[in-house]
Image 1 (cartoon, rainbow, N blue to C red):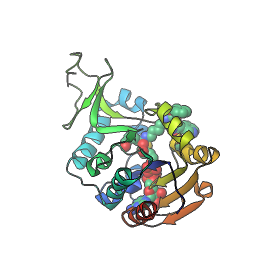
Image 2: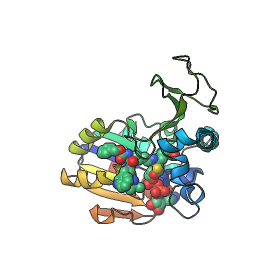
Image 3: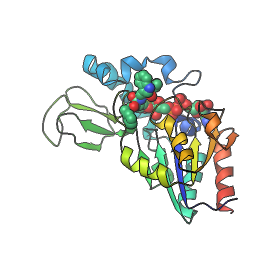
Image 4: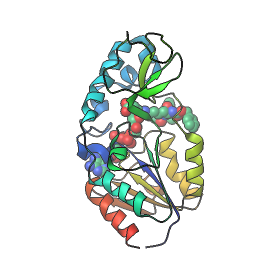
Length: 234
Ligand code: BJW
């Protein structure tokens, strides 16, 4: 296999599916049970905070004892064993990359195990339910805590750092994402324009299918370890 120096990895909900966490747009996925407009916009939170908090409280409880699968573990092995730079950009709000051992990680859509205070901007670890009457431990004000996740219409985290990573990567891997949500859905095109070899590892062809020089379709727990073995094996 070609020698690379800088690998950028974009991951999505399909990587965590085999750990038992639902994807969004597959049959039976989260958006088949909830309307985006009701639970995943700042307007929904302003209108009906209890419904939005209940939705994330349920999902937070679910991730607390969820374990990474062979796909997450293979990516952590790649970061540890690859002689160049590996940066993992995840759209997932779950903690499974870090539980597997990945360290150079960007949570572009935030983290469900953190709370954000809308009054003072403090982000802190948060593993219990958030309710409308919780007081922020940093500023002492009540009613401003929300899950630290990025809703539609909000700016994803660390976009400047992501741009730098996409600009210098020579291999771009897109794993377990349908390619429906921007700006992440535009990363393959940006990496390709910067000269990277682009690869999709997904259950099925994504919306960006034609931007990938190489594609392997199958379960993340199988195709990711195989691809990482190829990269580390030289
Ligand atoms: C497997 C598998 C297995 C299954 N193995 N694979 C037009 C109109 C209005 C708005 C817009 C517009 N065009 C663009 C926008 C902006 C909007 C957007 O993209 N809308 C689209 C719907 C059109 N985007 C935003 O608002 C974003 N912010 C923004 O753009 O700010 C301005 C800006 C401008 C320029 C630069 C920078 C910023 C914010 C988006 C926030 C998304 N938030 C969510 C919720 C987060 C919190 C939570 O978890 O609840 O993020 S939505 C949801 O979708 C979640 C995910 O991270 C995201 C992506 O989903 P993902 O990961 O791709 O999952 P699925 O389910 O779609 O796909 C799973 C895939 O896995 C499938 O392909 C399966 O086949 C596969 N799979 N099992 C391998 N075992």
